[in-house]
Image 1 (spheres, rainbow, N blue to C red):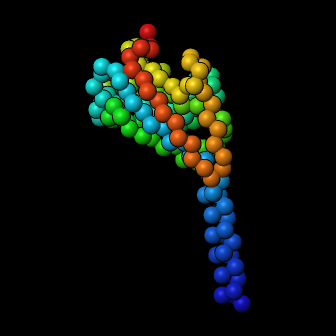
Image 2 (cartoon, rainbow, N blue to C red):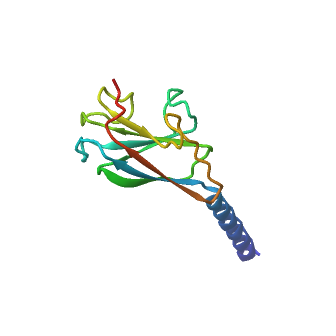
Image 3 (cartoon, rainbow, N blue to C red):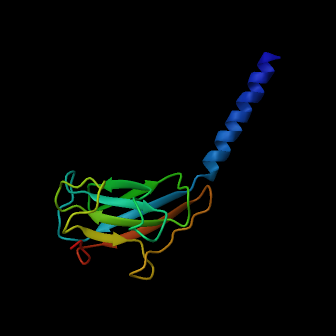
Length: 141
């Protein structure tokens, strides 16, 4: 009887975990920085995931970094859609993306109709792939 109970409980837990994993949303962001700055371990590109098109409404939901001019970051288990993504290149080598970007920071975002950010909608269990190409045209004053 105990063995049967353990088996049923194990199957229930496995089914619950499987269902949760299938409901996770993923956003993959391919980034290309074409600006003049050197991107390395100190001068990173930060990619931010937002749950609102108003990037001034609060901190991003998540932030990931790249230490090369071209790369990919992946946000898993995205909870709210539509989501939005932006990029920021740190020219100072001192910014950790925990505060407002410093003067001279190059900015980019995923947009299909500039200058407005484009919403990214992804179904549960699926992956949305977007691309952001940005350079030095838009900078923090």
